[in-house]
Length: 143
Image (cartoon, rainbow, N blue to C red; front, side, top):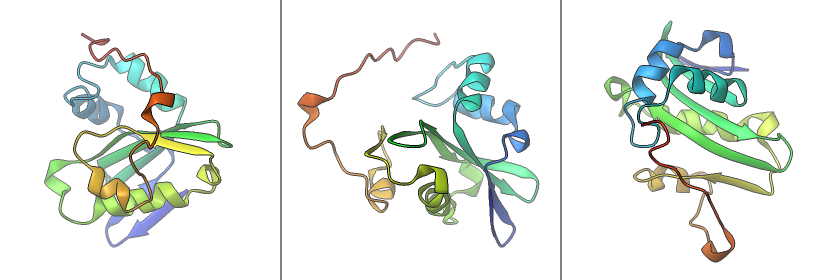
């Protein structure tokens, strides 16, 4: 799928993704620090991915890990710092939330340290009963 707005495009075509750019960016984030490129490629292959492009240059990304029926997990969302403040993160989220394969989930989750305001605009809330949620968390798995 593809959405266009002015000189920007959001596309789910994985062949367009700039793996080198994504690896450089994501391997320096707090959530994927040091991620090996092979793990990144594997994570992309198993997800619905959204690339954000300014003309031909990739400037953002998001991916949804999903069974396309009952559950989705939004991950790796970012807009390049040089392109922030242009409404691209909100537009990217609109594209994600309107994608036909991502409708009707019983649960759609994400984790964020600093973008709660953005995600609240799209219906995400805190977990009302955190005691029912469990996890295995290995923040240094790539180190």
